Length: 276
Length: 316
Image (cartoon, rainbow over all chains, first blue to last red; front, side):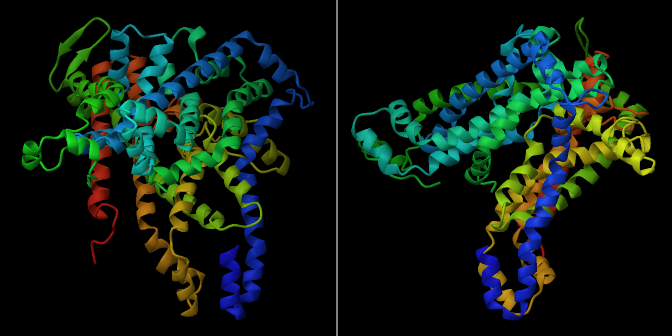
């Protein structure tokens, strides 16, 4: 806003064009956004219709009372919540060490952490499956959760945040006789809430949405997360789009709620991590 | 790296060793081991070990029965496997359309929503929303929209009397459809990245340009694009990693097309999965993963080289 009006003041003869663009921008942006989000609206509308086109809540009610769907949703909650809790612990500890401790090889460790972001799951899927199988973790929650916890992004985000904490706070804690862990716990954790929420939101969405890994290591349908479960419905409910969209909507609802309430933390994380 | 002097540490380090090693990097070594070990153990066990094991496995015949060393046989097999080459071709087309598509779409959207105006926060959120839902949900929703006969588009086209193609059933359309859906899913996130890059450009540059009489088009080519080079580089790089080895192509293909029709959407990622988990060809799958990883890193290295690590100052 300020920029546009500034331009109008600077170049008076363009005022009329600036005025037009002030109206055009919101209109164009609004139209495009609605087109982009329309598939999600279609999903919700279709879940509220019978296959002959009448409005109904039956699809959603049927999906919610299906004990299988409930089990898969519960599995997804167990997996994403425990994953997020563990990620917060592991990556805040690592990020603190890389930001605040001085030790030999720190640069190397940091590069190693950054390099993990180039190793995407598909390229290590086969050996990772073999390792997890040898550990006896096929068809277990531990097997679904633990191998996915160590991507370096969260550590880097935590490190960038901890780097911004003024040294005086740390020194005050040291003078009070706190060791490294006490300093971390009493000084750094309480002020790191924004970084924690950012990491938690991003990790919750990523782990709720993960498909390839849980698909690979679970064959027992009682351990399927919702992403794996609903794909098995494709053949079972072929053509029954109202019900399929109801189940899909339920599977996406937790992420949509978290996203719309906490999306500003996603934006903040881009800034903190230095990506932008 | 700057090392700020810390009174406690300075006092505990004997003057003798301080002289020999003026930067007491050993200071927090013991604590660092404690803080880093959960992460380090996990990375070694679940990222580094599989990455190394991938190469070892690619030299072996790995079945549920046991492991036999076969040398380069798996790599030889790849040379004569038309489906592998086909999958590389599909992956190349996918990446060649996805990377420029992602860059242009995310930049265009960013230029549309980088300033403050009525509803801009909501528009940004709506544009980002497809990124929040899973690729499985994305694939299912789009399967409905694109379904032959009773899908949303088919219904609309029918009412208008226009023929709609079989988006996922026609080998000529299927890959294009998967690419378009990938872009729909990812463009909002990279738009946010681009918005950040755009907002970092000092406003004075545009004021000066306007005084010099530069129009919107000239401002874009002379200021916006040159100043956003590092951001664009980042998006191109990430797009390439995602395009060649990302999870999204697997998820979408698994749910929507299973590699078909007529292998038109059989991306290498998907073909590797099939070989491993449908045919039990673990060694062969590992060999193909290794080749794909080499291709990905080579492409990334070329980007770094050509653009001088994203600074683009090769000619300057």
